[in-house]
Length: 358
Image (cartoon, rainbow, N blue to C red; front, side):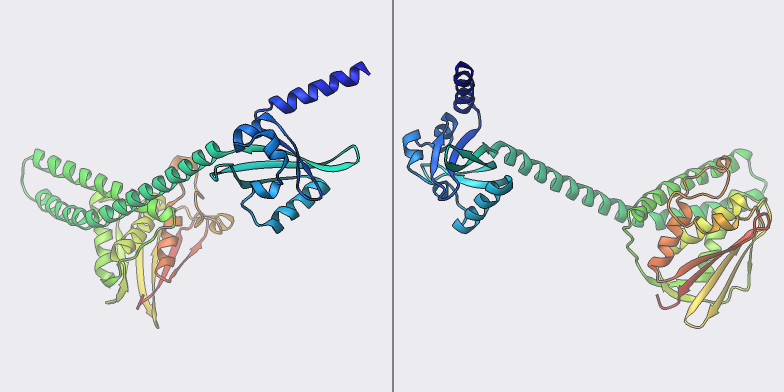
């Protein structure tokens, strides 16, 4: 008997001194049977006033929903969030854990109710911070995209002019330091071009591809791209074969990126042998083949090299496995496709097929 009284005293102490509100509610009609000190504190009622009320008086929710929650709590217990009303009419968010329990002959619900005002405030701050951060990132990406587009054309023009100047002064009897200075300037421009291309690549990897379509002379575009490689290395020849006058409605800068990526790979893996670029019109579309005579790609690797971070060469060649993935994304953004014909050890042909009208 003494042990029973001891347990009862402990239960009473825990009930009265709990930091959370604890209510004992009649499972049938919602009458509040008992309430602890925290309930008096949070609701602003005295215990006597609370015992004269029902749970419906403390809820803002429609009576039917409250009744259904009580039924669920009685059957299997329930945890939910709600909004409760204080004596002065103010409201506050709560988390309610309610469980059915028989006390004597009466079926009751033991409800533990926690004020989550601070939690909701922190959640709102977090959501606002996330929204602000996302907007800042969007603005950053928009700036980088615009800046990259705007910088690409003048940088390309400067690069081409430096290439022409370098070829001219190399044919003339000029001081070696002039040649060295021009080469250094060209190297810095190419470095800047690579940085701009990296910014554009980052947009593509995230799936943010914006095309600025316009009339494009495909022959001029391919020649411009090839000229940049000739300046970088006189040992590797790029030959254009059967490239008729072809014009289309495309994004010139993005197509430059496509063929720069393909020619970069052809130079890197082509074993120093000539590279061919062949273009032909096929009804409403044009095919552009970039052929090298290099190490080739195995059949198993050919099926995956257009995926992100996939590579089909030894680590010694370097790279992140994004070039062909980006190339495919850009080609498909134009409504085209890219395919590969290759034999390991005998070279590769990448075919870019584009609709002429975009």
